[in-house]
Image (spheres, protein in one colour):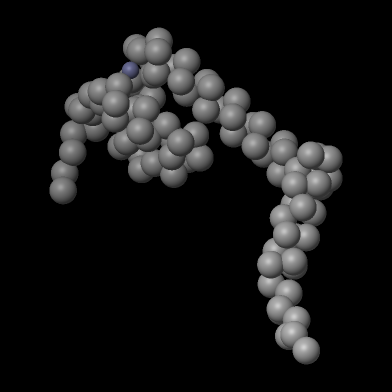
Length: 95
Ligand SMILES: [Zn+2]
């Protein structure tokens, strides 16, 4: 498998958008990375999509770094636990 380093095949928008999450997470191979970088250089809509993915990633990271769950999420979890316990509780036998 030999590829010419100066001839990187162009990526199209669908290909780039599908791989943006890998790209943002640095999970793409070096060739794919070069293709995506070249495409983002020339394509405004894909660059905007990429910047949005970066923002989402940053938000998720910050949410995970925060140890305290928000009150609504906490009460939702507590409700679910209570419901599950009620459901799992064995039925009382009659008489
Ligand atoms: Zn594009």
